[in-house]
Length: 67
Image (cartoon, rainbow, N blue to C red; front, side, top):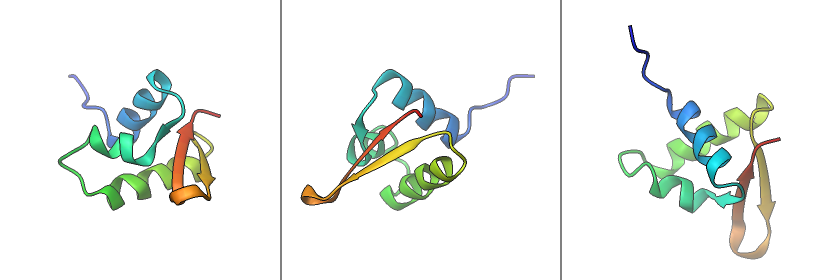
């Protein structure tokens, strides 16, 4: 049986392929989801140590990369 990738898995794969992508760039890859749902999942991945979020004060840009 083939298991479907979770949104978290998809975010991690996207960041692996495109390091330093912004929250806006990540949300553009998931048009079916509200940006806040993507942000909450990215925060969860960050708390678990799977993703590193870098908050830049200029225009409140959030960049993501793998740890």
